[in-house]
Image 1 (cartoon, helix red, strand yellow):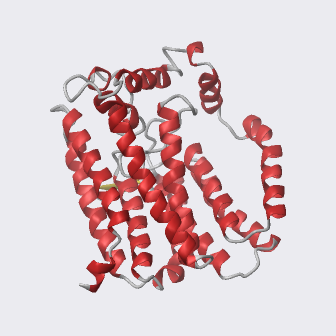
Image 2: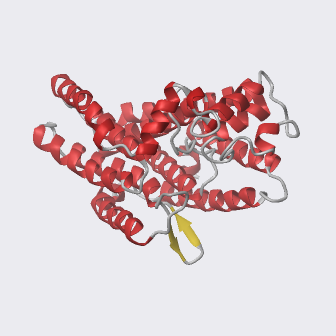
Length: 354
């Protein structure tokens, strides 16, 4: 009963509603040939909820102790992806163990948040030594991810590093120096780090009409689907772009556009409001816990939800270049579901101990 009274429903409630909306959307728009999306996601969500409540019941003291071990395991798994994984759509991102297929780069996000929270929370002053060490740990994972290639997740990892060192108490002068250095290096990364197809995505983002039947197809169809829903959407039977498969990856990368076509501005606004409620709870926890492990983890994980949601929605609406970043708690995918439900479980556990 004590655990039930301490359960933060203002955080858990929006999470459950988002997953419910995801399952409803997958079921409503899945034809006979794709209904397995619904059943698979239902299985992963059930597993994720079990993980969430187990994590919620565990003492929070164990998480700082496990971070460095988890970092080593995820680094090995990412290296194993590059060595043994079979390419899918030109990328090596999934490992298969028996009948289970999972994406280690998804779990790298929460592992990095925990590792950096552990590193920064154990030092009163964030000096250059801690900054460089944290950057080295982040860059190692980001490099393994970008090599797959998965530029979107790599950029998210670097962004999480920036958020965590900022909230951990770095001086404004040092933070501005870091931002300035990154801005100076950015043009070089375009020429030396990006692959040809990634450069093409940026050029197509700037002018989608330059290749409307090729590189610009996804972005153009996404905007058409999203805008065609108008205020209330076309309903279950009227989402032609999704059902006729003009919209690519309608249940994963472009699920926000699929929701917009089916349920309109009202449906997408409900999703954004629910993200806002989760974000408020995450920020509130971070402020209450301060610069402890729990506070920094809460800030980092909340930033992950907000950042990944913004990137996916920005990509769907044509505000950002196309990249394979799933919409948290909505997009189809077992690894993503387990990642975010586990993170929510950790936040609930820290709320329990307030």
